[in-house]
Length: 287
Ligand code: C2E
Ligand code: CA
Ligand code: CA
Ligand code: CA
Image (cartoon, rainbow, N blue to C red):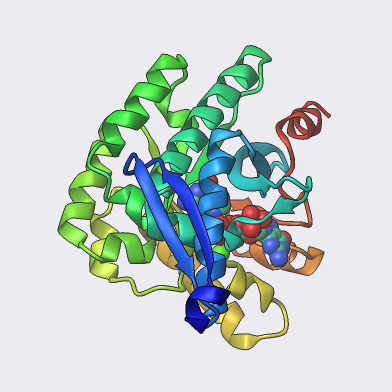
């Protein structure tokens, strides 16, 4: 009885299942679980109300210093007008399956932005992050192909960033899926490289274009010997596999110099620019 008295009851229409879902929150329930359920509900609304935004972070060619690409990073502008970072909601969206719809929204937004940029003579490729659940979506290749074509943009303007864990889960399947992406012309990038488990054997089999060196290694430059050793090893491995290298989270001139000496191809990080809205990105490229 005590339990019922203190319980909060929340009802909401679950879009996914098309029926009402009843949630009973008891004080005994972990505060965390309660917050998660509320967050899930808010995310559904955020998608409906267009509260998500895409920010773009420039990817710079280390030799020319020119912006050649961007990584699309989602933000959530909540009802207070604050920007919520993806770290706070992507994993929940992933667990609840909402990431599929969010991912489709991101894809649409990115492709239409690329189309607008091309109309202004700005020719850059944009990378989209894929989470494990999206990668398992059977319709993914078709969806991407459709959105790219309907925007009339070349497929190689779009890159997908995938983490090691996602492909190493089921290597054979991953290879055939990655091949299908390559067939339609999409670029593929291995994200956060070095943080997960990766088999070098499979790495060679994957038809990927680029390796992104995780920020945790770049962060250790120039003070940490192991970070420098790992970064050096990754770049040399990538070169021998004819893959482009991108260092993420570059914040200092020293890091940039170190990466230049190793012939790293591209850099991305606060030293150049944080992720910024499309309009700001346009101004940055035109400068
Ligand atoms: P990630 O793919 O590893 O993205 C890089 C993160 O590092 C971004 O955080 C970016 O803002 C941040 N960053 C870039 N340069 C620097 C730097 O110089 N210093 C520091 N300290 N950080 C830097 P963000 O935007 O908070 O994104 C976090 C993660 O959320 C991403 O990690 C990615 O895994 C995920 N994510 C973001 N957008 C999407 C999306 O549209 N779909 C999916 N599935 N995941 C996304
Ligand atoms: Ca990424
Ligand atoms: Ca990354
Ligand atoms: Ca990372």
